Length: 116
Image (cartoon, rainbow, N blue to C red):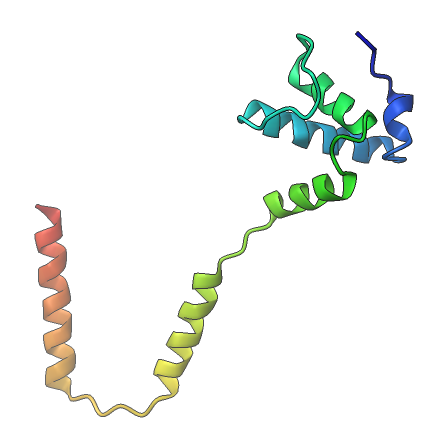
């Protein structure tokens, strides 16, 4: 069994802090069920992740992109809802007081029914 040293990995990721972040991200992916790309040899997930980086089994750029994607919070439905609300506010609509009152009463009735 070959030992993994930091020097083996530094050739691929020159910054030691970035190396730690990328290796930990890959180790979490392995522990979450991802298939290891090198032989496990009874090693734990962080060691397997470092061996993958050192053996060039995993692309550093792909790993970096995966890490960045995991931290992003993209909510496309929120943008669509905001646009729909904005269009609804801009559209001229003739609504009477009776229609507003009927809608409010229907909403209150629906909330009461949801309780039970």
